[in-house]
Length: 413
Image 1 (cartoon, rainbow, N blue to C red):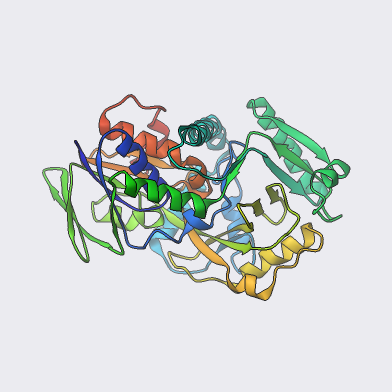
Image 2: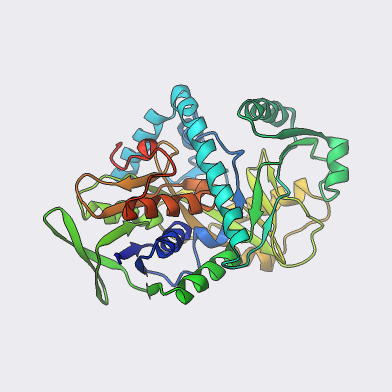
């Protein structure tokens, strides 16, 4: 029985543990927190095959620079002197070409579809119960420009074999009466699904505990012990852990940990915010408010409003103006929904690990025989948790890989 230590207790780390346990491994998860907060808990809960266009698309850096001094903008880069960020931004700019985006479309689509199927497989298995709905996703627009962009995207989606239905303003009001008159139409992606992340994470963690996974929480990794190109132990501020195999799935903190091993795995934390409303809103379908870039999800017992992408370093600072931006968008797109001061006060944030080219890092390194890496999923982390965990398990247990891992090569930068 192989002993495996996983650094990181987010959705990717826990799914790695899930599939490793299924394959007979003895697993320990080490995390500096208590696995109750962060991007895996506050995200929109979407499984999105419809999101097949890479974040590193042409013009994104220019948009970020344009919005740099507007901290309420949807895509915000905080002005700061940070050499690692400048290097990452340069790699991002080089990756953000039309040809690279085209190459990544089938890769992103395939990995999303496979991961969605795994969610359904887990649901059918009965290992643990979780909220899972097949209502699809509405891309709701409130401008002609937004409509034009979404119609083009829908046309491309259909070419990719994804079902995208054009919804007129009149039809949309019948489907989702909560929308205001500002919303003029939508695209309905029936291929998408949604869940309730906080409930799911709790259930998955409980299943792992019940199946022998050990959790070393509140422990920060300080040192990684290497002998003959092989990791033999990790040392935290409290303990030491030895194993046959190690998995680095530390999300936005992966870059700093990888540096301890002289590995360049360029990751930047892209902060997202969410507001939960625990009262009746009249919202019954998940939607992305196109112009505002806000995600809306009717979860199990509450409605979540989430969004924004902020590059300001790895911190948990909540900028009130960004929370206010989400609140204003909700009031504009929906009728009679006002987010209260207390609800805004209770808003949360989390850091998504963003790679320079919009593809995650999944696989082995050449430098270390027993190290696997799983990170860099950006806004697709929740979608891609199961398939990433399965791939890591296949690598460690020597099984045939479910996907070609070359596009996710750890050492591509």
